[in-house]
Image (cartoon, rainbow, N blue to C red):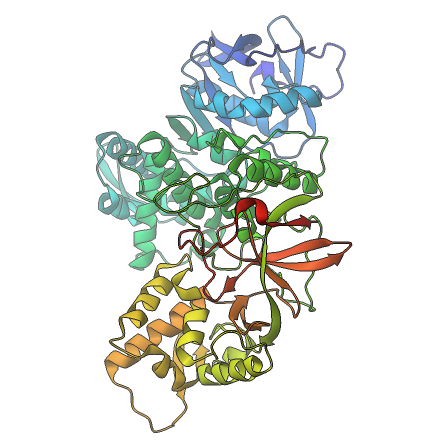
Length: 632
């Protein structure tokens, strides 16, 4: 081991004393230089102060902290000692050889971890720190893997293809699973799984690094990256191509027998690399990246946070601040907050910065509404718990702007907000009168029961007991409701609704012929109302498409009838819940009275003919004529 990285668990008398950082984007960098000793260089270290914009060319390290105990000594030039974690000690011994600039930024060393105020300030600068580095060096961790020439070969091919902007997938597919590699000009046959490139990459993808929260911005913000593997190194683009080749082999079932254990362990990396690469491409090569619109910050964290881990739970928000490109959304890191207060503070900043309430569309998370009813959301009810997965298909956001535009104008959210209370404005549109049992979606819940005609009949009975100020539900209107009149953020649902509107085939009539939609593993069977009824192949195909659209779009949701006789669709709604349109929100929101004139937010929901009323000029009140709602 490098003498300057020797463990020294008890001698704390000469500990390095951090001096205060200035306010003007000042940072520290670890300077390192090698002194040749025999055939192995010995590295020397020192800490320097500079600013982000005046710093010498430097690299940044991305790694896993591991256990938080800092009991390993890093001896600095001059004799003072920095105490670091065991994982970082191992990382430095490896990445020092890959540092081409002589300077490296490492969070654990370059931030005084015992100074909360400095940590708050430096976390705000993390985006710029990683964005300005020459490249990020990624150390996945200590993996006990033998050297594998095939891995090094795969990395070289992937890196060359990344530079040449060509697709090497087919070439990599062969190299990954072939047990023959060239060594010293001769073909060498490997019999052991651990000498297969594919086996080793599965092991690498199983590393804890891929589930760590901070790594997303650490890999996406720099223009260059270098993943240091047990055999060889590869860029993010190269790793993306390797991932693609592995997926192709899996699809084509070209996988050696007996490596199921490492395949199961590899899910984290195999899932995260494509997400990282897509985000990186959008940021650095927008002409080559995905054509999809850039995600809002709340959409991004809602999608990613449930799948990552952080040593400090507050970092499930703070770890992504560098990826927030909205200058109006200013989330201030504060490690004095509890995790729940961090969520509330972030939600507050998103609402006030955007002047919109569309973040309410991601309130429903895994498990909401599945247990004992009625389901009450914990206060503050308007704050999503980003740690849990979303479990509802979202509605489309309005294209209307808070400023007058060709797509119409949405009244902006203009109320006050703190960590506990959100004051909003809008109007009550209706109230819930009755819930139709069971849930809408076939194939997933309530014993796979799906009887569309029964749903229509029950909705008609509920309508009879309403104020009947709206037309009675029909097969067409119920079908439109379970697809949110084409307002689901899912192509299959919008496409099917559009087909029904064309009128060439009566899809509601087709659905009326189904009593049950039964799933047995990969086997699927339709149980028809008339046992001997025959359906043409084209009608069966369309029916299958309709059931799939309803299953994926309306899953977890119930159909409701309102006091006025409208149809509604939601997950956690109960009788007497208010359905309102709030200024700054694209679609209706369900509120539940909490006493003393205050309300809990349940979710955004479908209300017949009231989806995205802003672009359809359906709002018939002036901005200053709205009611006030106090949400807790």
